[in-house]
Length: 262
Image (cartoon, rainbow, N blue to C red):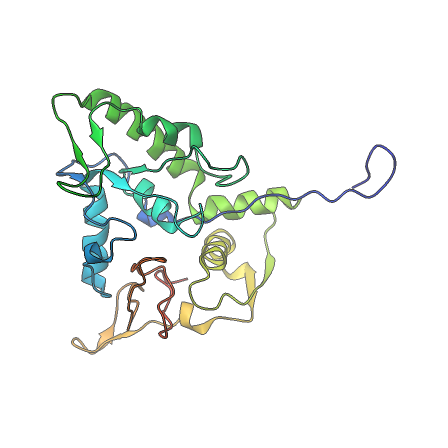
């Protein structure tokens, strides 16, 4: 567009990860554990194997936890933040040094309020992170968790992110699109954008080059039939810097996408 002086002005819009709508819970689930067992960068807590069953248990862990440690590691943007929020848990992250333009699609003011809840101890050593029950205010927790979940339901799905991108590009309401991008293995932004556009536009989306591993359904050899959903990330060895979950790139071993594009 043209600036006030007639010169060309380029405007940039921020993008971020997202999560499939089917992974977002409908309400804040019942809680069992103070904190999710996984502690980022503590590889001894990465107990989940790369299987469909382990992925279900991984999600159940977050859904059953009041809080989940989600500190900054290599960068501020992390799939763990989206997984935790989609599970109806609360991520514990210190945003004191977070730049204004980092995490542009996250409700940072709501996330800052998590650390203000009374009775939360985040020490990862000794007894580990825990809740001091005599100080913890369950009502305040539920109110804040509900706000975070509502925000996630409305703004953090892959489909919502695709709609945002089309609107920012001046093509709101578009009925077809060409998606050009080599996702490769572990490219979360490419994965989630492509998933969102496919959910939004269906067969009217053309993606090039087509990443066949995102569409091909793996065979469940024990049942001699395809898996019902695409969730398996085979042959992985987690890295403490990048995590051990199915969304990550494993050293020396490529992974498949953790969701299937229908």
